[in-house]
Image 1 (tube, rainbow, N blue to C red):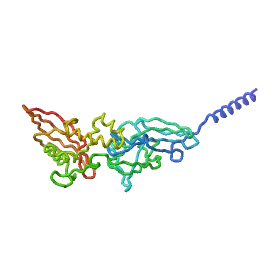
Image 2: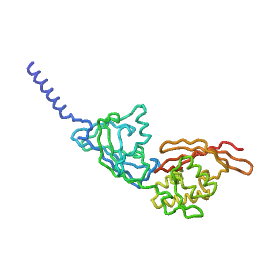
Image 3: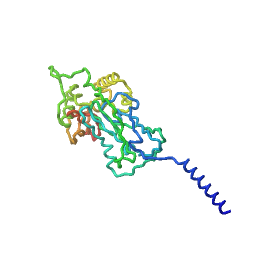
Length: 327
């Protein structure tokens, strides 16, 4: 009887072990040997320098299990803690990371993530804006690679690299890039922007407006950026062709000259006084007190001009106006 009972127990144990072996699935952590990351453009269009909101560069990122086992990895809810991008131009000069990316990664915070499991040949995809990671301020040909951190960014020893993606960033279709060439009134001298300080840029722009010298007024103005500061104009501009954008910029300039839109930027002050100027190597602000004379009173306003540097030239790309008082 004991021998029969022992035989039955042994058979049950063998049967359970067999079931366990059948249900067992091998798992492995993501490494360059068993996973790959691929990047391609998402809704590819024409790309220009500037902010990620105004002219984004969306890339489609795919993580694939290339092994015969179940692949597991962590994926942060904020993808900046799972993905990285590197880009170099034709001279092998590397693009800098954005301030947003640097700030997030150097600030102490809790990083939330999910555990992802992929079966053999399965893929997981998502879309990211490349300009959230890299500061693309100049037109050029860039060679972009993506890096994936299966154990999140802080564990950079484990990383999977993508193949290279070629990104062409074209010059912004601004008025200065058109066939129109501004010349000095009364002479044939071509008006050219100079490498002057931000406060001098603003000063010359206001003086040009006071003297109704439109070519000099627009000389240090990033018309495309100012046009896109309006949300509805920006949406229409971003969905237009290159020729349509050039026409929009031409019409925008003409409307400014007629004070049909954005009247604050073309208003003529009776006098002005530069208050403060602050700037780094690439960005700056200039605050100016401006007086506007009316028949019975004078308005005093503070203009804040936002400037940025491209190829050594400072340009006004945005502005705000605060009404201070009347005199």
